[in-house]
Length: 175
Image (tube, rainbow, N blue to C red):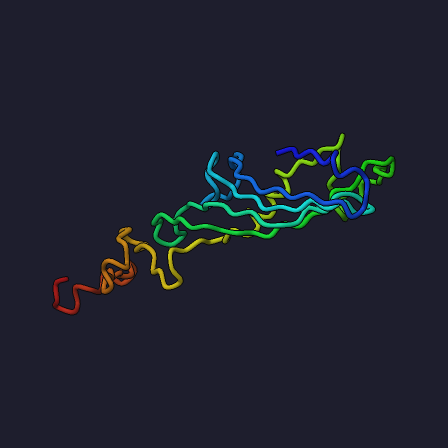
C-alpha cells in the first residue's frame, strides 16, 4: 500500500485526500478475530505536508470476522478505526542509535512514497478485542461435555470426588 506523496512536495500546508476501497492484506488480525485477506478496506485519509514530513490522518472502515472466545459462534461486524501517523522526510538525520529507535519507532517517506500497510495494521489490530464475545452475557460451552450453555440454561453435571467414591456404598443409595 505504497502511496505517492511527490505532489505534496516539501511545502508545509499542502494537502491531499485519499478516499479508496483497497483489498485487505494478509495477517490483519489475531487468532480469533480479524479482517479477511482481500476484503474491502474503506480508506478516508488526509495527507498533510508539515515541516518534519507528511502527517497522515483519517479513518479506515473494515469488515471484521471471527468467533466468540466463549462459545465459538461466528462473529461479523464493521469496525471504524482512526489513524494518525507522521512520516518523517529522509534528510540524513536518519542516523540514530539503536536505543533511540527502540524508544520511538519512526516511519519514513522513502523516495516520495509512504507505506500505509504497517500503520493500518497497527491501528486495526490494536482496536480488535483480545477476547471477542458474541454478547457480554455469553455463557460459553460446558467444560465437561461441550454443550452450548445458552441452549440449555439448567445444564449441569454431578461431579463426584473420586476420593469419596469408596464411602458412597455406606449411604445405602445407588446413584
